[in-house]
Image 1 (cartoon, helix red, strand yellow):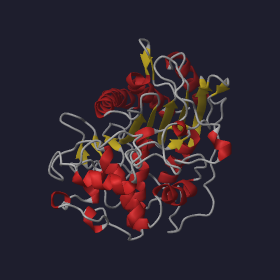
Image 2 (cartoon, helix red, strand yellow; image 1 turned 180 degrees about the vertical axis):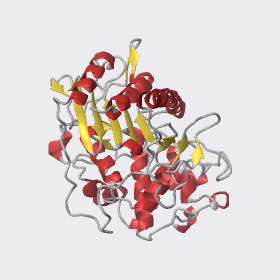
Image 3 (cartoon, helix red, strand yellow; image 1 turned 90 degrees about the horizontal axis):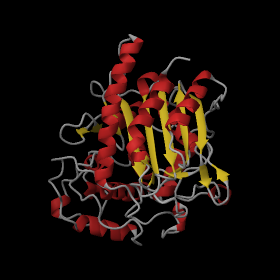
Image 4 (cartoon, helix red, strand yellow; image 1 turned 120 degrees about the vertical axis):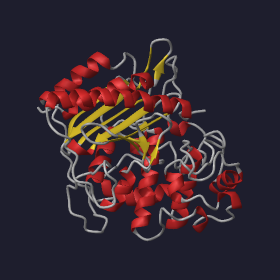
Length: 416
């Protein structure tokens, strides 16, 4: 099944959590400074992250993308990132790595091949499947709809969906966003040709794993239901709503389920653990407007390192979400399991650290893997993606995630 299994994602979260705790202790000892977390915006809970705005909110979607500083490869920080990757990125893995600080790219570097048979190298604009990082966009779409008055996160799902059975009438949009709805992790294979209405019928008929709101249990199904809520509340297809209200305002020109023909050639070919090509994401069974509904809303979006930097830039300001919406998205609403230092916000995991909260999500399938991580307190961001998640008996980028991600955050946050 080409979608990251729950057990694998939980391992990745735990590994990263341990590394983040270790890293922040080291950074605090080296810097000798106090926690630099900004004052929380209205509506946050103590310790929840705050993204400092870079532009005043106008209440309207801008007609042009924000100005984006480009990386300076000769900078000291960029050189340090390049040395780190030369020492730590596994041989034979294709991918792209971006680091940013204070609203500008520090480095955006391609590694290995995006398409080995064509001899095409990976670069900053290579397109990857970002997997479950898609959930952060679904959450942002819901919050954007709340900003317009089309819904409230406290709404029961029956306010927007038809024929909700009695056992699910207490499920709210908040429950879906925080993986506390009780809906199962999955109701079928990602490539099964399932329509929206068929997905909803199956999801609403499935027995609940727990009473709504009782416990955290990661649910891809819940985020597919959220994508259906986006369509019902907006009157637009899910992909179109994201393009018009998230990707366009953020200046993301290479992100979506369906990309224009000139960009399709820049989508990375994915490779299995033996190095055998598995094609591009759109080479597998899917609907004309994107993946079928077992994957839609919870995974499968295509994007680039440069576009993910633009997404974080948009979240720093009010281009997409206002302060109240961001406060809800970044608040650590529910712990991610017993003994875990992390909590789930809306479409993002939140780690408490000595240098302020870290917001992050990973995503992957059997062939690709991606990580987005940002620390709003010092305006540091890391994104990396690979089209070769593992090589049999040699390495796994999922296992290397913690070492790579925290090392890159360290370098991005260092004063040049």
